[in-house]
Length: 534
Image (cartoon, rainbow, N blue to C red):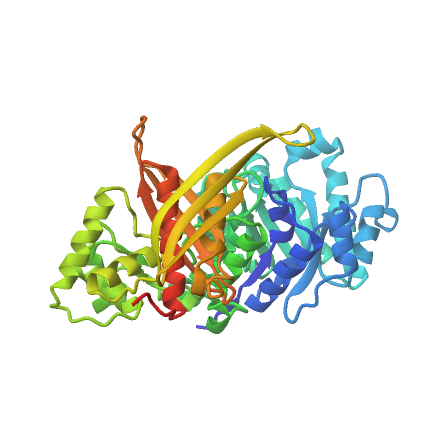
């Protein structure tokens, strides 16, 4: 059976920009567009030229794409004027040479109340606008706004809107679940009715995630016949977001129910760049990636329970529905108080420690992990601290420096210009190869000051740690009250692109932070093969 072609249309640069807290720059948009192009997305919607300075500038100097079509977005012409004299359409035609998506009303309620025009006038606006673009050699798309609400209220009018666009020459008629309230069974039933009058090869789906069904709705629409899916990277979008292409794409490519039905422009080789594309967006937005995101999250292929690990080692299909490599991710074996020997063995193997399965020291490592986690430690994400702990039990972790003491002072005062400021000062006393070193550091907080002091002078190791940076710092209070225990996680990185996470636990947040900081330094020195004290 021959497969039909399915197209992906990304709206991250427009719908994503409507997300609370997201504000793309022109440079951001170019980086994201180029990554989407490398992934193999068929259409990339750049925004609405003329609607704001950023989008206007972006279309004046569009990104150079190898395979993707670069699209502009706008609206159908206004009632009461011709398409030739509509400034909105004119601006879209001046924005490059790619496809143009026009949004138009398909819900009779909106036509009557919002536009305050007759239904016949609305149909004319749709048909004339699409024909105008088609006549000038552009590929027109029609986004049927609130289509599913409109269909449920007045199916005849909603279908008339679609037919007006289709008969005028629209390449794609995109069925929009604009408020995200339609459920999968409704989507499938309605789309099935639409395909009786408009071929699925000209139909697309655009879902919002207000009921957490945007991905499911998109899949339902494909089953019902649509052959273009719109969505965004990581599901960003206004309110609760849009359909997440990062989940939809691998489902279409890797799951036989869909892979046997349709073919896409994204090869299995392209798919291995999916995780990288997802995390690039988070990097541009300066936010931490969702660890539990399907397919691409750091925890998507993370195994914690001992029985699970044993099963995965024998046959990954037991607890993994696809291979992590297929989407550019990786398998992780976590070590925690729920872990067994299998977890420890797997994790040791990951970090390059070869040890016999019957080695008694494995039990010692496991006991140490469980005892520490009972005290509040967590090694799920703190891989570097786990490796240090394991190597110390195995007698394979060198000692590089000794901390004799540290002290942190916090001062709140008025500065020379009368402004109230709070500054911190830390003093650290360490011993490196018999040399006593006292370092003082200042920072905008006690942890920053302690970090500055600790790394200010590490004797013979100072040059080795010069490129070490603290990338992230997280604090969690483990129990309430005045005797609360604090867990600190620190993510570090260096100039070689390596990053690692260490953990510290104490009733004192500064002490917990210091533990994590010293673990980070020790790990950096270890991976650099620095000369130990003895």
